[in-house]
Length: 455
Image (cartoon, rainbow, N blue to C red; front, side):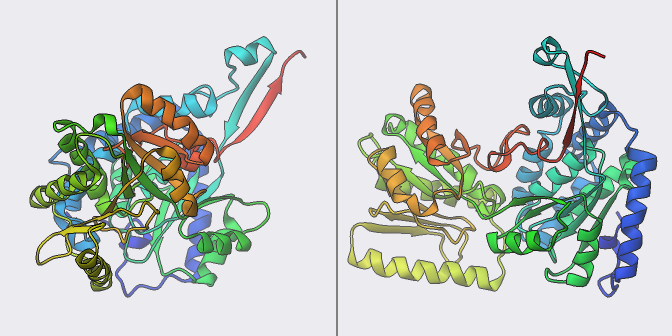
């Protein structure tokens, strides 16, 4: 399948994107939005998105096939990892889920189409509508594709012309998604543009920022601060900075039968997108006192990672990333040789996976790519004391606990600053209605207009 040249990312590598060309593209996107997108109903857009997502889940879909065939070379993810990640994302994009998102964030799924009123608003003779930004820019990170996919989905729902600036070398999957939208509805596809260049090209970026009504960006806190300082005062900025996640396993679920099941769920979280997302765990805290000890749980996790490598291999890494794992392993090999409080399991003759057990409960940042720590914590209080270094930077906590206990644990986690608590095994697979970093993903994009009746 040869993709046509609809977007800047379709141009050959030697092509140069000039400021003049970029300025013309921004103006074209705005005109196309006015002609083809601004007047669409929410239901029409929901139907296109759900149909495209359903097509992506079919084995014979040409875009899916291209993603799985060329993706390992283009992205570094194995075919099995790509398949799992794409299926998990597109499974969420259904008519029901999209309407649930609209209703959750806006109170009424028709709020983008007309003045509508909830029951509470009707009692006070009020109604409201929302409008999205005319021109929406996404500064995308290059680690995993889901945030970029989701940004495009939200932009279409809000009737925004969109420009996606991909990190250098990371446009392959967003490009395929954009082309699948174009094939399904060329007029909608014409309201979208994708390009890639190395960050720091101020000549190009300043043109985008001058045109933008809203900019979303994913990256380091330093990158976000630099971007924010360059935006016009009238442009809305939504930044998603550095976040980490971890898991907690309660002793009550650590039976001889339950331990392997929980280890399998943790493995799901570690292998999803090779642990590269902000929702992936760095550390799994295990409560002592169950039938399965924290050390034994680490061993079960290592066994499961070894099995999973046979069915869902990690894929090849760039040399610097592999070297980082090798270097980190060397440190723990020395520690394990001199102290029974450190244990290590790892793949043989490769850096495919690594499990480190440490008796020291202090939070430790992983070097990722299936490198996971297991540490004991006698209770949630001890865990949070030892994770204080990342307080305010924690996105997700995955739990394995009886449901009543999980509900009890969620409240202190929320008060400590965690923005999402979910079962282990679902950390990298949030529902469509998830509030990203504790904020309404769709609601943050729109502007409200209230109508007070009684004329």
